[in-house]
Image (tube, rainbow, N blue to C red; front, side):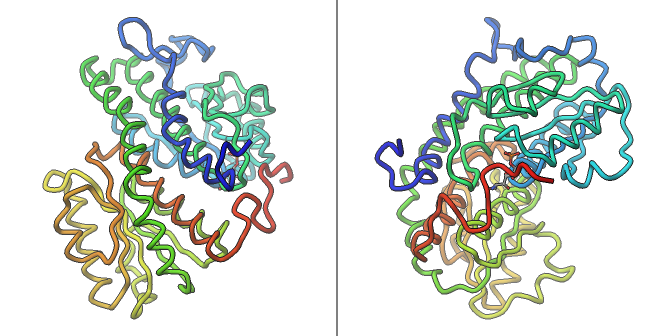
Length: 370
Ligand code: M6R
């Protein structure tokens, strides 16, 4: 059942490309436009949506955070992310034009289920992005967009994350289409980039695995890690940090790289490992230079720098001690590749420490209690 891999986590990380591919499959009409027929909210209601609130927990919430950057940019409507357990116990501002999107791999997370009931009681439509057919969350939602990642067994979520981003992007592009927020050609162009991502993820798996493993060997005695990113790299940093906490039991803090100077830089000492997600599109993306200056700052304080950066990024090569290379891709697509080396890194660390990567202590695959 592990298909030759020695853990489910290993198998599932290697299914990242297929998870994206399968989630895209059958979601286009003959003209190449996004067609989400299974989502039973009619076009008229979709057109009226003026705000999205994503409710989710853990990894699923980080996928929602990534989607916020894309959907706000494409559709020009506000997208809020709220941890389901927080949403549930406050008085959220919802209108019939708010679309609540519940993201859940298992579809059984009690916090998310309670939050979705809370939203529906107040008259909002809920769309579930879920990986498990017929689970409670999709059953109780007004509409469902399934991620077709295939069953995820390891407690640490991996392929579900990339599939959730893919599904949320499809939803965003569909909304842009229905609302006329973008030209058809622009949407097609983005879809082409999205369709290229399984190949790019595969490249990462094929070429970077050894470097990642060696980095884990070098870092085995590290007591703590910092993970930093900006824009879509920020939720990726949070997700990379979560993986390491969850299965390698290492104190890890993820935060927005811009926050460094507002406090966290005080933590950086000689030899402290700091992982940076460096944005692509060097020269065109102002954030590239910003992240780079963060790298310089911590380097000056003796940090050990691990970077995820675009192939050929000479600036990063100059400062980083280790680089996990990503093939060139647009910024909004980069999380789909960037999370992969972080998943592998956490898994390698945990295995080298002798832990069971599929069943970390104190955790369950689906959290069915509030
Ligand atoms: O099944 P769900 O996607 O609703 O689960 C949400 C979280 O419990 C889950 O992502 C958790 O954070 C993972 N163990 C992270 O690897």
